Image 1 (spheres, rainbow, N blue to C red):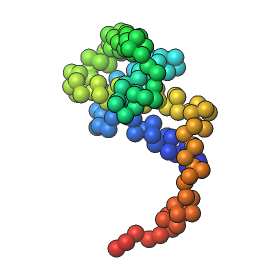
Image 2 (cartoon, rainbow, N blue to C red):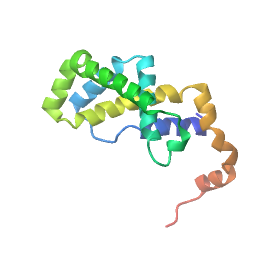
Image 3 (tube, rainbow, N blue to C red):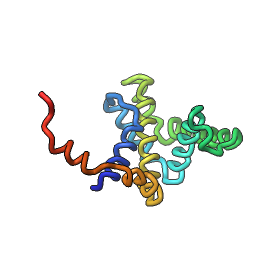
Length: 151
């Protein structure tokens, strides 16, 4: 696996919220992922992107309008409602009963990770995210990898 692919996979993994999941949260996570399709996961990734674009340092990089954000919020609200009250009803109940409402962070963090991975595997995205490689000093990296740690 090339260095940029490792970093892309690492970035996608970083987007998941770190937390210890129990069996009920794992079951809910799997159910959420299994009951969304590629189009829904792309829409979820768009919602995540819109949220990040709201940060003051990112606002100038996006053309999201208030109406577009509202449309995205509406889609995600309906998606989450369907997932928790229909498709993953029993898994949602079990997760809250056995592990508390904190399982939602774990389960929806996992779904967000799956959504972002779907985008990150696109050739155009991979190409864009590998642009930094032309500025990466591979010789320094290789020297560092061959060096012994300071005692």
